[in-house]
Image 1: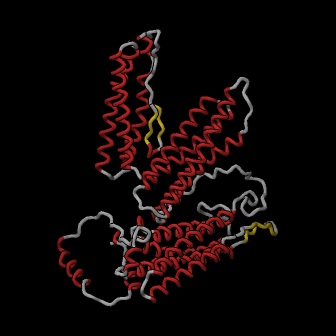
Image 2 (image 1 turned 90 degrees about the horizontal axis):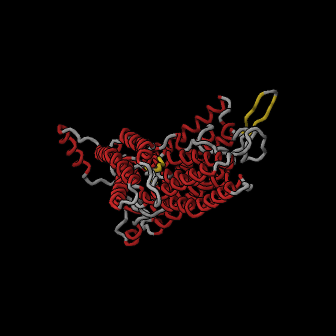
Length: 523
């Protein structure tokens, strides 16, 4: 039986030994000497270890109890499965032994599924995707090595593991998207999963079958290894793209630097000198060159980045107020923020962007997100009955279009290395400074647009047009606060007094009131 603990990417092959034939009865002593018992227990041990690991990093008490109970039941079932297999091996013609074996097989599969679901419940999808990506990379490397060593069994077995992992990733991510309202975020994620399932995996399967057939023939037939390597690489890239799409909705604070610092998986030469901007320069990527800037230039960039971080904190404070599951404006704002963070990280020699072509591609993504935000914002403005709010929103949307264009121009950062007097001189700092300034301006425009969109789409909900507009695409709902201890009783009177004062009617500018509001989870 093939099963999997999906959230931690553990691919297991659970088998009961089949030493029976229709014409001969095997020697029972020979069967008992075979290591089928220890073999099944060796398969069970990783299950228990994974379950314990998941429990140790989870704070879900009820979920942890269910995982531990499921694991203990599976351990208790293991010797019974072994005994049933031994009984069937001793009497392969016995109908009762076969029915008994089928019953325990069904119970084993059921209990493994229960444990799998229990581990699912206490493990985040972010952890699942991170570990799955690493295991896919390991399996891809094993596949290539098996192909080069002409190991047909190893190639076929590892390729099957890759297909199983990819199918599980697609299933888990697709199910996760059912928890969100349809929008830009879900479309991007589902688009990545469809690309993997409909295009990448069929090509990989075709290459594996061709490789197995070529290696199995006598004599072995030659085959194009580069085609196989490219197909394998696309599988890894597809899993990584799905993970990036899922993480796009996260705020930068929720992400670690390691979220995108993965192996380059680059087959280009690291020693040759390339002249194109999107290739390696003097054996190094443009990102690596930016990391070698002199301290004076690094200090200038750090000063600009600090100013950018101030604008970013304002955007974080604004978007953290809202539930983004039904608000495409908030989703787009988070996407643009994360991409701009990647671009500024590039100027410091960090982040996932390695070359100028990556920065240009990121700028295009920001422009696309800006266009979608402009379309949504103009729809809100068209239904807004207040001319002042409408004009404010349109003005901020024009700023977004302007700064997106400016960012696109500044994205063509050319990091060059020149040898002057025996010293390496890195140029391109001015372009990097302009890039950070453009990102800062765009960040500010996005913050103002979010505020203006909220005022225009909620302050006048009594209008029939706005009532119909305030649906899934731009549903403004406060983000639910995290569970925290209740306030002390001695402060109850003070709290009630504050509520009473806050309930008094005041004439406050809506944008000013919105800027003074702090997210509930910061209380």
